[in-house]
Image (cartoon, rainbow, N blue to C red; front, side, top):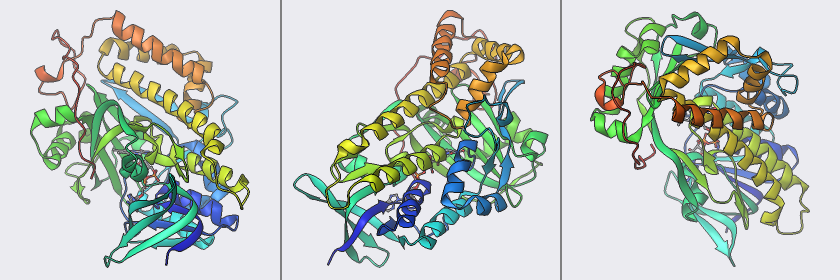
Length: 450
Ligand SMILES: Cc1cc2nc3c(=O)[nH]c(=O)nc-3n(C[C@H](O)[C@H](O)[C@H](O)COP(=O)(O)OP(=O)(O)OC[C@H]3O[C@@H](n4cnc5c(N)ncnc54)[C@H](O)[C@@H]3O)c2cc1C
């Protein structure tokens, strides 16, 4: 006998648990089907201040505050220069004006707090249940099939299926509507036992360092743990011919930020994790009987730490739309048109910021322009930037678009003095100038997601 619900949520990450909490709080019968057992590890520890209002709405802010490090902003190192984004410097329209801070979280704890809250509000949580297929009738998704840890099969039916399976993107893959977007990059990351040495990292700042077409990060997590990672093109990883472990060890030894940002000889206390597929999008976010929330709909390179916020924001929007629908009629995909339009807007402008970031990473002239402008930046421009990267993606889109187009123009107009990866032994660790030619742009293949 299939189990009957108002809503079925696939995946118990931030997107799935947010939907489940909001629906359960409104008295809906909702089940979360999650293949892992919580608590479980997940990457994505640097959050945005615009999410704090969502934490309040869900009733989890206090629990998150108690288990995380307060984050006042993010800082990028461009060679020897620093470009900070301080959340207190937002413009008057920022939704986070009254709480200009975010958090650095251990996702094992953070995701568990969110999922526990869903259960507390009345959602049924089934961990160890992998969703393996969709049940479709007359072109409509009416439920899903699962297999649990003891290989028991089951069926779950409901009025709407929320796909919150993250990069696994269950519906996007099953319906073959998920496509790669910008150049394929991958992340390699782990947690280390060490103390931060840099004052900014000690004080909870996100600190990242760009290098040619990639970047590293260092985040001070609770319990003397530091999250460290590197993002680079998949093709370059293949050319380097090192295992992810060896490559990460090397970056920790050689990258300026990681080498000098932690106490010496940091002990790795987690496995080395690898994620590919960074840059994917589905052609639609809703269809007959289903809607996508979070990474399952689209995934943008994480250099601006936008993922968890987009996941929770999209979950709130989709849950609110669901709750507005009459209970006795099927839900038409048309009700998600505005949802799709708003999210596509966020996707477009966050992607433009990411592309501007990578253009700068490949061009030291562009970096100098950014550093120069940063020094004399008109305050209102800086405020627009901080408002956007704090998570208010619907504000200042015109400004972001100008940044993107100016960057394209500057990258075209000024010669690239950056050392090309093929010619520099340091291409993973620093930005160096040379006379060498820029590398030929090339398409990459998708790495498998782990
Ligand atoms: C290298 C890297 C660094 C990042 N850094 C940041 C950062 O600093 N800040 C930030 O905000 N974001 C960051 N992100 C992005 C962030 O990790 C995601 O955007 C965020 O976790 C999305 O939440 P979600 O709920 O959509 O998906 P997830 O958190 O991935 O949750 C999906 C859940 O679905 C479950 N699932 C998958 N398939 C199935 C199935 N078939 N059946 C049942 N359950 C299933 C999974 O087990 C998982 O628990 C980073 C991502 C990467 C790759």
